[in-house]
Image 1: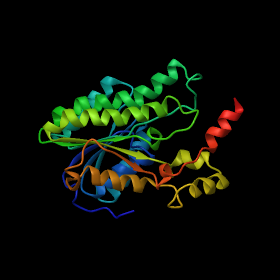
Image 2: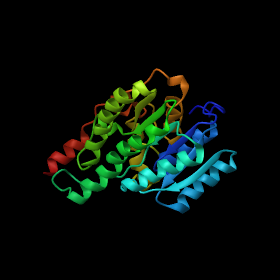
Image 3: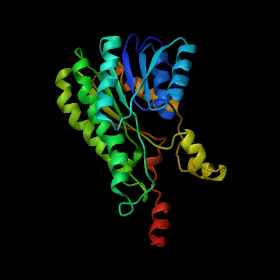
Image 4: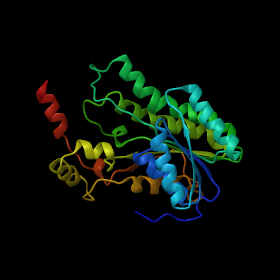
Length: 265
C-alpha cells in the first residue's frame, strides 16, 4: 500500500458512513492522515469513539456522529450536523453495508429490507442530502463489491444490490457532473477485516489467498488508498466508473462454489 500523502486532502470535510470498523475505519483514518476533517459514522458510539481517538492520536481531526442508515431522518440529520459544524461537505463515502447468507428463494421481506435499505437506499439518500452542501463541487465514493461482476449462491439480495450500486453510480455521475460533483464506485474483493478472520480457518485462508494472482487478500489500507485517490483532485477527470480492487480475483475463472451448490440441489 502507498503511504498517506499529508496535505492531499487538506481542509476537506469528509463523511464516511459505516466507519466504526473494517474498511470504513481504514478509509476514515486514511483521509484524516491526508488532512481531511472526518465525520466517523455508525450505530455504536463506543466503536466510533475508538476510531476517532485513533485518528486524533495520530494528529488528525475527526468527530463521531451516530446514525442508523436504515433511518431516512437519521441520514438527513447526519448530513445537516456535518454541514452545520464545518460549513460544507467535500467528500461522501457511502460505505455502510450488511449482508444475509440467503438464496433468492430463502430470503424474506425482512432480509430484503435489511440489505436494500442499508446498502442501497441509504447511498441514494446520503447523496440526495449532501448535494446542497457541496456548493463548489465534491466527490462521492460508493463502496460496492466484486460481487457486482461475478458472484456465488447464497448471498441474495446482497449480490443484486452490489450490481445496483454500480448502476446508481453511473446515473448519479450524469446528473451531478454539471454541478462539479464526481461519483465513482470501488468494488473490493476479499479484505482482511474482522468478519473475514472469523469466517476463514487457516486452511481456508490459504486456499482463498491462492485464488488471487497477487497471492494475498486485501487489507483495509488497500481500499482506503484507492478511496483517497479517487476523491482527490488527482482524479478530477474520473467519474461514473466502477473500479475493482481485488488483487486480480475477478480475473480468475473459478466455478467450484457453483458446482458444489448445484450438486447439492
